[in-house]
Length: 99
Image 1 (cartoon, rainbow, N blue to C red):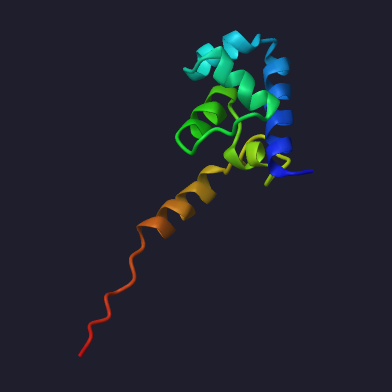
Image 2: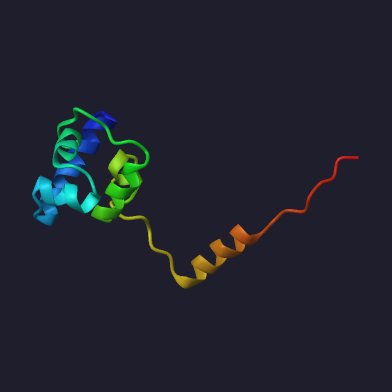
């Protein structure tokens, strides 16, 4: 299955799971109904600005919408793991000066 087909299938499924009309989904995302219909039908593909808004509205990851993951939500980490991630992000390697 192509990424575009995965996207539109998942978009339709997410909307149906929430019991929304295309108009309600479009309103929630902040776009026109026709624009939303074009995404579900595959006539158009959303740009990189709109994709995060769609993912946020449906509360799923971009990886899920793109078909890169079958898990709709990113993994949740316990506090110990989150602290380790924060520490790793804060770590800065020493600068190597060119001589």
